[in-house]
Image 1 (tube, rainbow over the protein chains, first blue to last red):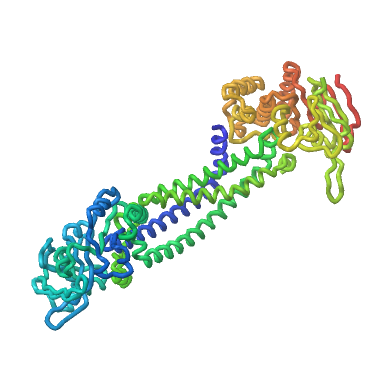
Image 2 (image 1 turned 45 degrees about the horizontal axis):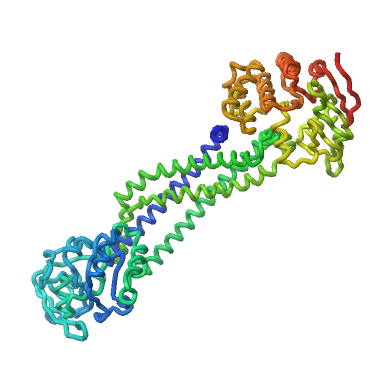
Length: 406
Length: 227
C-alpha cells in the first residue's frame, strides 16, 4: 500500500508534466473511441440494412441451394428442423420464404420479377415489410394479392387495385401462371429491389409454383446479431449436413464482410498513428522521470531498495498516469457516443443518394459496444507496459555510486 | 569487537589516465567508536566510505563487516547487506520528498518487510529520540536542513544497523544545526552504543570525534585519538 501511495504522490511531484501526459492519453483515447464507435456503428447499420432488412443474419437452406438457386433445391420444413430452430434461445424470429423468378406482365409490358413468397405476419415482425407500403395496404395470408416494388409498378404501368400477371417455371418444370390483385406498392432503399420485387403471401406463392409446402429458405433473426457466426456454426452441428446448409450473413454477403474489414483496417492504421504519437509522448515522460530521479534512485539503492522494486514503482507511476488519461478519455466519450447513437449523423445530397442506391440508410449511428471502450484502454495500457520495459532496463542497470554523483 | 575492517584496500578508477582513489588502506573500527575520516578534497574519503558501505567493489584488498568479507558479494547481495547492516546519512539529506518524516523512517523498515505496527512504533520512537516528535507528519520540504538531517539519522537507525556511515553530514548545516546534530549522534553513540563513521573536513565534527583517521592521496597518513 505504501508503494502505491509513494507512486501516487510521485506522479504529482511534477503536476504539469503529469497533466500533459494524461491529457495526451485522454485525447488519444477519446478520439480513438469516437472513431471506432462511428466505424462500428456504421458497420452495424450496414449489416442491419443488408441482413436485418431482408437477408437475415442466418439462413437455413437445402444443401446446395446457395450455389444453385433452383426450385429443385427446395425443402419441406419438417418438425425436427422447426423444433431445432424454435428452441434455440438466441433466435428471435423464424421466417419461412420461397423465392424464385418469373415474368411479370401487364398489357403488353413484361419485366423480370423476383417473386418472394412470405409469411405476412412473420415478415412484418422481422423486416417490417408492412412499413414499406407507400400506396395501398399490406396483404394477409392466403390472399391472391401481391405487393409490388414501386419502380416495377411504374414500369408495368400498374397501380393499386390493378391485376398483375405472373408467368414462370414451377417445381419440376411445371408451368407457373397466375394473376394477382395489387394490394400495395412498396419502396426499398435499393433501386434494384424496387425494380424487380413482387411479394406474394407464402401459400399463394407455393400454389403459383406448384411446390406444395416447400421453401427455399428459413431466415433467422437473432437477439444478438453479433452471434450470427456462432449460431450458424452450432446449428450446422445440430442439423444433418447432408441435407442442410446453414449460412451466416458473412457467408451470404462476403463482399460486405470484406468491405467492413478493409474499412476497419484503414481505421486501425489511423488509430495506430495516433497511438504512435502518444507512445512517443509517454516515452518522453519516462526519459524525463528517469533523468531527474537518477540521484534519488541511487540513494534508494544505497539504503537497500532493490532495483526491481524501483522498477515496479516507476511502472506503477506510469500506469497511474496513463490510467488517469484512459479513464478520463472513456468517461468523456461516453455521453458523446451515447448521444450520436440515438441521434445519428445523417448525410445528405449525393452522398446520401449513393448510400440509398445500395439500399443503405444514409445515417451514421455510433456504437456503444463496451468492447470499443475496453479495447482502447487495454491498447494504451499495453503501450505503457511495453514502454516501461525501457525504464526497467535502465533501472535494473543502475549503479548507486554513479547515480548519486548526478 | 571489530565492526569494520579494511585489508589493504585499493580502488583504481580506470580511464585514459587510471586514478587511484584509495591506495592500500587498512583500518579497523571497533564497536561503539565515534570516528571521523578526514582529509582534503580528493583525498579518497568518500571512495573509502563507499567501499566500506558496500556501494562499490575494491580493485584489490578486502572489506570485512561484522566478520563477513563483503568484497565479493554480488550487486543484489550487497543491497540486502546494506539494508540490514548499514545505516547511511548523506550530505544532502536525501529524504524521499513526497513522504512525511515518519514515512521516510518507516520506508526502510518496509524494505525490510517489518510489520506495520512495528514500523509505526519504531518510527515514532526514533523521531522522538532525534527531537522531531512534533514534526512527524511534515514532509522534508517543510523542515529545516538540520531537521531533515535528523530525520536522515532516524532513518539510518531504523533498520537497526551495525554502524552508521555519514558522508559529510554537516556540510550543508549552519553552526546551531551542526551542534545539535553532533550532540544527538554523540548521545546515540553513548546510550545505544551505535558505531558512527564520518567522512568530513568540518573542524566541528573533527573536534567531537573520539578518533580521527587522516587520509591523503588515498592513503592513511595518520590516526589519532581525541581528548
